[in-house]
Length: 102
Image 1 (cartoon, helix red, strand yellow):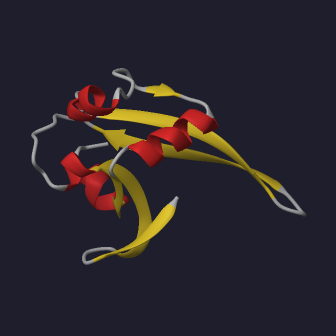
Image 2 (image 1 turned 30 degrees about the vertical axis):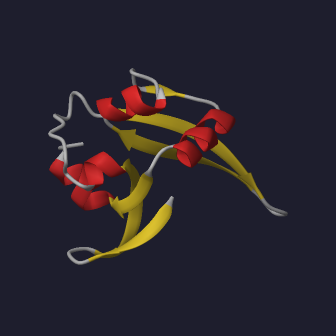
């Protein structure tokens, strides 16, 4: 998870959302919001951690980038490909989740 500085919440974790959602150019109900999750394993010398990462996007991204039309969990490689292909940006996870009642 990345970190951002929110004008309301200060330094917090960031959700990765598509540029369409970030620009508020489209109206997406929480039921139409898409989320892809991935469990990534992070290893260092002393420990192994499992991190759950998410990408949030809209139906327009499904059409434009061929992203999955259903919420699902995907492989590390597919997650990284989607993150690289799509126009994602980090936003305050508290503001975003409050906005969409997540």
